[in-house]
Amino acid sequence: MKKKLIKNTSEHFDTLFHNKPQHIFLSPGRINIIGEHIDYNDGFVLPAAINKYVCIAISPNEDSKCKIVAKDLNEIFEFDLNDALVPNSDMWINYILGVLQQFKEKKSLDKGFNAVFSSTVPIGAGLSSSAAVECGFAYALNKMNNFNLTKEEIALIGQKSEHTFVGVNCGIMDQFASVFGKKNKVIKLDCTTLEYEYHNADFKKYSLLLLDSNVKHTHLTSGYNVRRQEVEQGLTVLKNHFPEVKTFRNCTEEMVNSVKQELGETIYKRSHFVVKEIQRVQDAVNALKASDFKKLGSLMTETHYGLSKEYEVSCDEIDFLVDSVSKEKTVLGARMMGGGFGGCSINLVEKGSENKLIESISKQYKTAFGIDLKAYKIKISKGTTEYKN
Ligand code: GLA
Image (cartoon, rainbow, N blue to C red; front, side, top):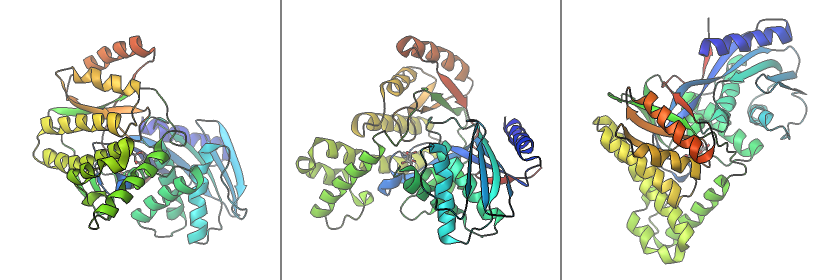
C-alpha cells in the first residue's frame, strides 16, 4: 500500500509538472494506546505512528511561487510566498499555510515549491491525518532549506499551525507521534516537559485492531475547544484551594472530590476524568512492561467509560462498538481513540480472532445504525521521513 501510494503520488507530480519530484516525504498517522484528552492537561500519553501515510512529492522552485495539489481532493492551491498568508475557506490548505507562516516568521523562506500530496490516513477517523500533513510539510521544508530544526521544533510547528490557521486548540500528542514514531515502539510522552521514552509494542498473543465507525468528526465543530475551556475552569478552582497544585498532574482524586460542590456537575466530571486518566497511563505502562495484557485491556476499557460518561466526547456509534466487542471473550479491552465524537475505536484482541470479530461486529453495527464498519489491522511504524529509492 505504501509503495502504491508513493508511485501514484510521484506519477501524478510527473504528469502535472512534467518532471520527477526531487523529494518524496512520508508522514504517518497515529494511534494512541491510552492517555486521551490529557496531552493538553499535562498528563502522559502512549501513542505510536502507524503504517498509514501522507505522501508528499515535492520540488523547490527558483522563484517564490508555490503550487500545492491535493491529489485525493483533486484541488490545486497556488500562491506567492511573498504574499500575506491568511487562513482560507478551503480547509485542507490551512494545515499547510499555517506551517509556512511559521517558517516565514522563524526563517527566511524565499524559495517556493511545487508539491503533490496524497494520503492513506483516513480523514476524520481519529488517526491524525491533519498532523501527518502538517508534520510532513514542516519536515519537507526543513530538509529542503537546510534549516536544521529539531524533530521537536517540527512537531511544535505542526501543532501551532493547527492552533493558528485551523482553529483547533489541540495538544502536542498527534504531531509528536507522527514525527517521533519508531517501528514497533510506543512512545510514552510527558506532555509537560516533552521528555519521552520508547517502550516495546510487543503485545505477544494479542494485537491492536481499529474499528472505524465511519462517523466523521471535525474538531472545529466538535466540543474539543469547549473541553479545553472546561478543564481550565476546573484547574482554576483546584489551584485556589490547593496552592501546591500547578497542573492536573499534582491533583489527587480526593482533592477533586473535596471541591465537587464548587466545581458543579460538568466541570467536576471533566476534572475527575483527567486525574484518573493521568494515573491510568502510568498503570498501563507498567502493565505493558510486565506483559500484563489483561490489566492493560481493562485500563483501556475504563478509559472508554471515562471518556464517554465523564468527559463526554464519545458518540452512540462508538459506544455501541465498545459495548459489543466487550462481550467477546477474545477482546481484552476497547475504547474510543483520539479526539472523539466519531472516528475509530482501538481494541486489544487475541491474535487470529480479528476476522471473525470484524465480521460479527460489522453485522451488528449495520443492523443498529445502517452504517458499514471499516476495520484496520495496523502496524506500528517509523515517523516522518524522507523516502529514498
Ligand atoms: C486530538 C488532538 C490531540 C489530543 C487528542 C485527544 O487528536 O489533536 O492533541 O488532545 O485529540 O487525546
